[in-house]
Image (cartoon, rainbow, N blue to C red; front, top):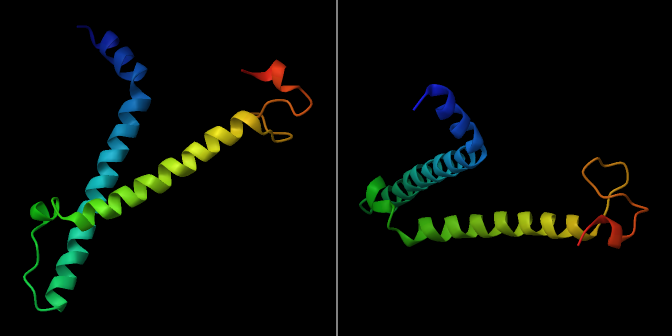
Length: 106
């Protein structure tokens, strides 16, 4: 495969790759920092801290992660759904304010 075709294929999927990489990086940062805080709390209470790899199976990590994902998906869904039906004057991304719904989308 030529490098030109590789870069075209890479660029054609660059948004998905970038978002996937950001997701993985943010999860790793969340996981390691949450494990660090949990270890500090365990030490403060005289308990044995959980190793970072073992913390990956801890319910607290997944509770925090799903809580965060839920709020992110909810806010994104609200923005998408509201932008379908509502309009904003002088916004280049919005449908025309005076245009009827039947002309702007279905």
